[in-house]
Length: 340
Ligand SMILES: [Zn+2]
Image (cartoon, rainbow, N blue to C red; front, side):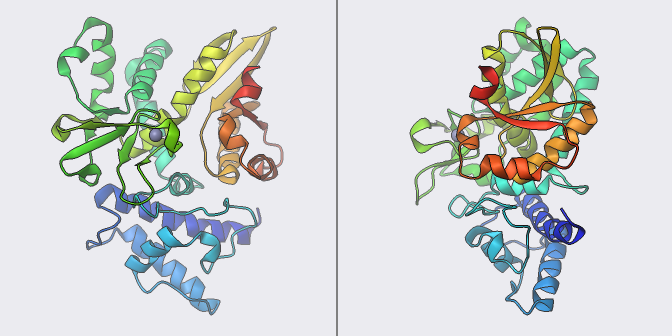
């Protein structure tokens, strides 16, 4: 990427961070004041760039949010590098009114990234509190298996086999955000285990973007008994964690957790060690850039393992491979490729 290209990317990531910040304090479809300063500043930057280029600009935050839902960033007054985002990408889901995974990934890109970084900081603190990698691995698996507890049952979690883990992770859970309540109900997807909405148009929506046929919604009439992990852990730990557990179960070799960042693994076979990280990025270009940073921190080659369905998307592998920075020791593999 050139410096000019990074300046354009920095602008769209600033808008994404503003959208994420707004989503943490309010519902994206109802406009309440004041808006977070990050969103206001991002708007000012988009307007300045648009005016300098003589292109249409949003008149205020509400219109900027409408753009996030209705226009892909290629239609904004930005000149993002060709192929930087996949076709049809949006920052806000047009029907569900929630930040998309694309938005979350962009908000995590670059030196000012917020969301994946929040997940990493939370996991690092948890690893410290755990003291051993084994205990941390048990806690991490607990979070992956229960990103949303629809009917929190304190008695179950005080059983001896889970009590120690629960004591270490319980501070991470919070009540479900109000915007996920509808008619007194809260919904969770049985496939990705994340929060869901029963939208009027286009059928149900869930945070993991599961295929409609693969998804059922579970309901709770007692939202006060629902506990959820923060968005950062839901999207950057629990969502890829489901696929990671499948990968780990298919490998015959010994697999060891590397407690770094969101968590990578080391697998040993034939006397050779390989490190891998399972992730579920919607955007291949930003994924390649972030993966290169992870490999750099690990100080060695890293296999990035992604669900088959994502790798099979048109242009996904090419987009990822083209974006790998010079010298970065990463390669993209589908789950099937990695486990056979
Ligand atoms: Zn789902």
